[in-house]
Image (cartoon, rainbow, N blue to C red; front, side, top):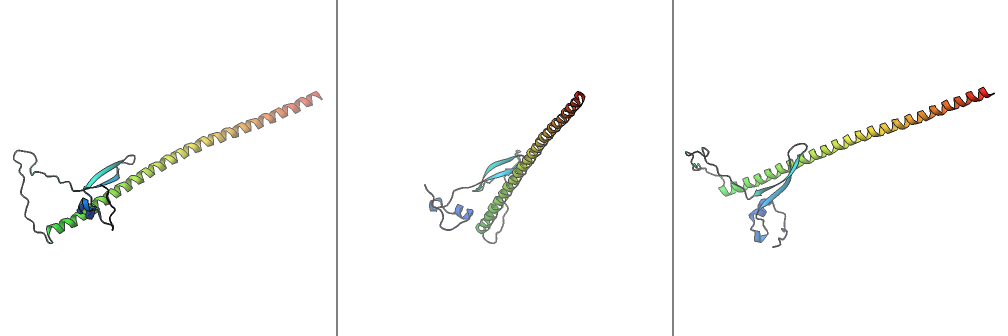
Length: 161
């Protein structure tokens, strides 16, 4: 089934709330680069909608643990409106967190690349300096050899006369 692009820009939550046959989406996944360390960044895929709910029992897994009933809460406005607002804030927060992770990973990768480039430049400078010194030393040696040869030639010429 081909999905048509929406007529107007919609948020991810609105697209998720819309039925799929009307151009909505069934799941929302975010692909981002996670910052692990300065040398390691990993690509991650997280599903942010629909929410994954973890159920936990009070008291751990012991025999005496029981699922406690939820305490009664009164919501003002209605629970649906509160959930919609919280869901939007949750999605924004998760996406913002993933963007920050990606930014940190990008900065770490750039820093590592710049450090490698700097190290390579220092190594190249060292090699070129050694080559220049070697060439200069060879030139000086050649000049000294020519001077000594010239002096010996003049000395021989003086002895012959």
